[in-house]
Amino acid sequence: MSSVKSKFVVAVMAAWIALPAAGHHSAKIFDSETVLALPGTVTQFNWANPHTYIHIETQDDTGELVEWEIETDPVPILARSGWTRESIQPGDRVLIRARPDSNRQRKHALLVSIEKEDGSVLSSRSYFLRNPDDQQSLAHASDFSGLWELRNEDYDRYYAGWGAITLTEKGEVGSAEYNVRMDSPAAQCIAAPLPSILVAPYLNEIQISEDVIVIRNERFNAERTIYLDGRGHPENGERSNQGHSISWWEGDVLVIDTTHFSDHRAPISGQQGNEGVPSGAFKHVVERYTLSEDGTRILIDFTLEDPEYLAEPFSGRVQWYYAPHFEMMGFGCNLENSRRYTLE
Image 1 (cartoon, rainbow, N blue to C red):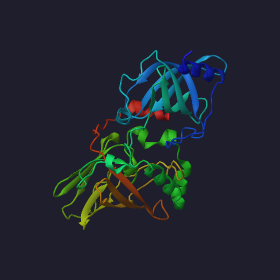
Image 2: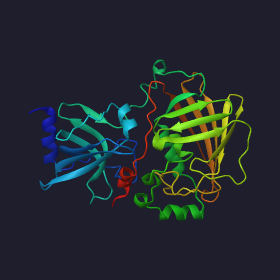
Image 3: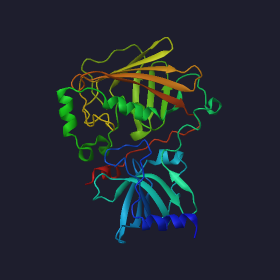
Image 4: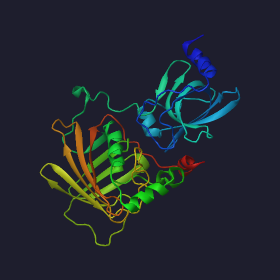
């Protein structure tokens, strides 16, 4: 018996194998402390945005066949992690490791890895920097223009910092009333605004002209227009998801000041605390962009003020690595696909 096939047998005999969670993905609807081993047969492979889904038929602990829906990342992230539309086919025998839905009545889980019968393993979000400790493997930029990707460790650091922020009474009420399944803006294809767009684990593209800077993020094709022509914020300007941004140079530092954000039910997901805190008309974000001496990174210092919901400013630093070896793919959001996140 092959080693992979024997793993299927052992996993069935042991029912659900619980392992310590070892990834950075801590979406609230999943149990981050448990990893299930699910051996079975692929019935569907939905290569789509904003979530790719794998359906497998497997045996439960009574020996009955049940179908599990395994959720994973969108197409751009999977493509950079070595996946293609043909990576998995209906009928394939696989061993899936995944974090189960916190609602154990649902046969729904978040993918950690999938092992095929030939021994090959696919995992999500495995493409980040080729080797950040080896400076020779990194590309070097001469300015802010080009493609950039998040430094991986900044994702958890950002959410840990957010979880420690003191809220106003109104912020605490908003957080307490939030239901991630039913209230998630992402389930309505609404992009994350600042500062969370800075830690979205997707590629960012920066284009700079004399009077305007454009910053794009792949998720939901979010785009920011930042004016560099000396104008101020309009007194009664239109409010929008990404706000109204003006900027100026302080030596080699690019300063971006953004106001006029539209109301948002959960602009910061709160994966490590302070979940579902809204934002409103008084939200104000200042970013300071600095290119590292070797040109491999952009250092972004940010401060968020929102006195309606936050009792203190939220500040932090995010780093983006220069990534010209990748292709900016972007994606349109399929509303039906996205709303599957909210199903009870």
